[in-house]
Length: 175
Image (tube, rainbow, N blue to C red; front, side, top):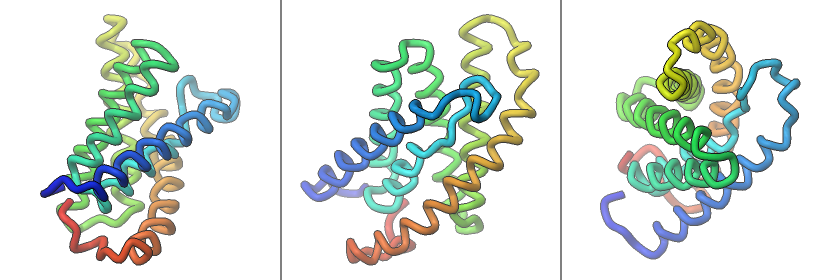
């Protein structure tokens, strides 16, 4: 986001709201669906991916931080810390891969889901002081392929027509 405008601020606010609603919807899905504690689809990350293209990297960072603050308020400090660690590391991976120009929505989304899960497990192990938590990293990385593919597919379906509707070239936008 090179220059802050009222339109950019409005887009950020809308994407923060979308992210919050998607986070609430994800929380409504019962845990036994995945059989893995804390595993979610990552639908709220769609708002972050969209923000990269519509508002730029700073707008996307704002959406990721607001999303984590919502988690902090609704699920507590530990979940909030894990969310901010996962969200910011995931965003960094998204930005690096999109800027490289070598990856599409699917690849970026799978990689960012893996980064999110790895950062959250690292944060959990530091918070509880037990690195054995990392022993399940392989399972979370495997699930990242599935959840990242779903989110990446959704982004690939949503972003191109959204860019056309907003009269922006999503590939020319500063990322």
